[in-house]
Image 1 (cartoon, rainbow, N blue to C red):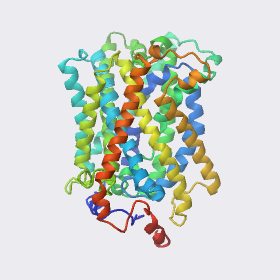
Image 2: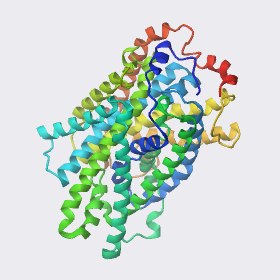
Image 3: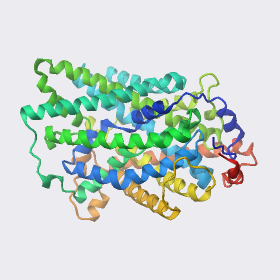
Image 4: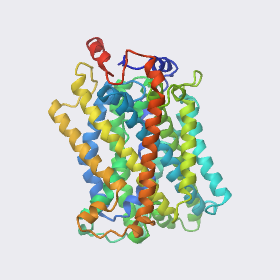
Length: 510
């Protein structure tokens, strides 16, 4: 397996605690559990039938080149830490520290500020009422957060079963929903959609791009646990190929189903998917409430498993960054010798998720508005990390040509760069729209009622969004400075020269 000689001694020591417990199917289910975000289906469907058109366009023009780039990179560079290691080898430690932090912090923000809200809203509507802002509301969200954290703390051999079962339930949920929708349509008819309804527009393009990019990203995330895979060189490319195809179908078909049964003005970020579920489940007659309750419970479990999968993946990357001297020294870079998990970063993720949940609950506006705002912030941090990760992956091909690649995109380095430029351009656009919504629309002369769309004023949105990014940047700066002790303990592996030792060793690597 590929070995990066430029990592610190602490990082190399922690790698010895990793337990080989992820097979090919485990990896596939872990990535499916993490990446396919069915909770955003309602949000994207709110743009009407053109959602289907733009989803198809993004699947072809973004997901395919993105998948090819990271299938090659993930199969060739198989150290624990994934994107952090790749970025450090390409651009040095400081840049890698930023990329890792942006990727990692997205997950507790998303779990605590959005997924917990979706779960409690769904539970309250279809299982047992939970009053917003009540003690039970807080307890539900806290339980949601810390169950995901616990699944990441236990050994991967046992913790992987939560996302694995969640992935199976997720696919089963979507298949059952589509089957019932088809029956419903034959019995009651569908919404009338004409060919013209699918015509793409500039407004839809700007509104949907960040949402769809967020949904399509993360297939390479399993590499964060590459040191715990049985055969990462072969399993990663296959996993990315299979998961990307499954993801395309998991978005295109349910979006179409939602559009066929739910009136456009009734689709919201939280209620869009279950508005469609509630409508089609009416074919069960008197049994509909029971079926809805079961579906809601399964949906909440899927959300928990998704949060757990991301905690498992992203926390490992950030722990390896800490062990490498890029995040608060060695304290957060320790893996439990018995469990093989980064318990300290796991706990930190739980704390960050809890704080963000408490802050999000203080926002004015409906649950749907809060969901939309936190979703946009999560999108911005996640997309911004890929403005670093994609150029890093492209550069690794040219910088380390002798490293064996079990899967190699059959194109020249020049064409490989073009694939990277295409993906980078999409991400750049999506990042701007996520952080500053409405600005490009104003530039193009399009109507954009900010409060009607977001449920809050533009100032409140930007204060929350930009304030979050500033806080993350401050955390990253302090964390990197505090990691100097670990870096100085390894004078032979400076951040600037990261990867140079590896370059000398490449010809002897398998």
